[in-house]
Image 1 (cartoon, rainbow, N blue to C red):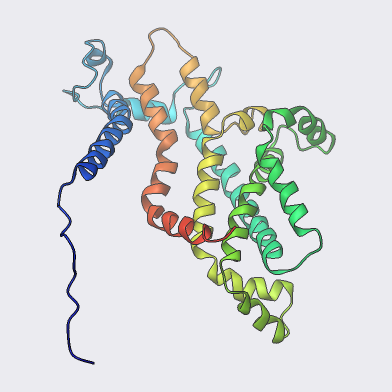
Image 2 (cartoon, rainbow, N blue to C red):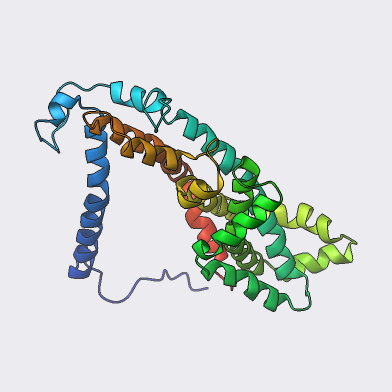
Length: 296
């Protein structure tokens, strides 16, 4: 050890290079492009109809009011009933929570089995499962309707939860398989030497390490299920229509003058849950994606 301190050599990077300025400009334009519709929705939802008729689209409301939000939540008409989006909100919760728990749990077990247990034909099974992710799900509607109707699952809560779980399994399995493949195989071998079986290894070794990927899977699954329209329209039945279907019914149900402020408020209420999830756990999402993208 000579005690010398290493000094960086070479040209000092400039603070503002043309490439960096171009990146900043692109990011700013993209942010404005995506945030401007959100701003218009917010200010329109707070305006009374008298101000909306004046045509000042980007102007802040002179007399802000929460009446459109209250109407959208509790008394907006979705066809023959006028109960607002609160019914669809409750239905979306009933659909999203069990489908997310079931799909993530099964995806974890599938990924664990395909990563650590040298099953025969494992790669073939995994490829067959992933093939389902590339088939347009509209092609499967008719056979699924017939199958669910035969077992009494069509048009009820069990049916829509089952369909949501089925269509999310390929992605959930892929996420957890890639994540578990990045973990040291010695953990599995050490647990096997200690006499742990299939479920003990998953519960005691891998489950505590799965936090980042569980957050990623939870964000993807919750937002995908919450924003789904077609599956809810076809399989949920009239009693369990999700919030997106109720929002479409509100927009397409007009009695007299179209209430743009109420419709914008209903749209924002529908988007609150996915936006809140991203804002709360966005950094965990980035960590989990980076951890699960090491190996395939």
